[in-house]
Image (cartoon, rainbow, N blue to C red; front, side, top):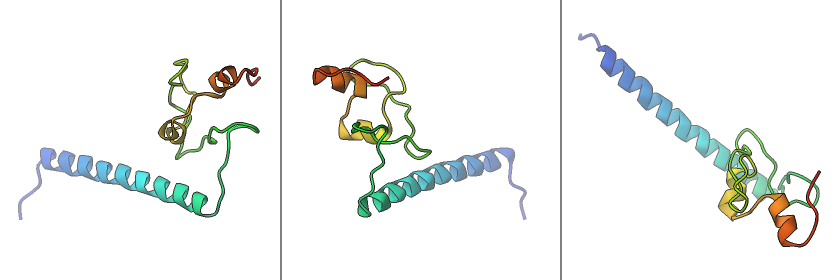
Length: 97
């Protein structure tokens, strides 16, 4: 029986980490789909169309309009939203405090 080399072990560990990331993404998708199937969408603020941030949908993306960091979640970006402040300006309203 041969002894695996360090390179083989490192490659196996990298493959397992990639598999785990993929499974975590699949689980996040399933959770989102389950919430949608139950008609539950959690919003960031009252009156906001932005989705609430969570561990599987973190607020870590910039607004495509103003460029400010950490304004959108991946779900917001997928839908094509901009941050609340930019949406309010576009609609002629004031921003959120």
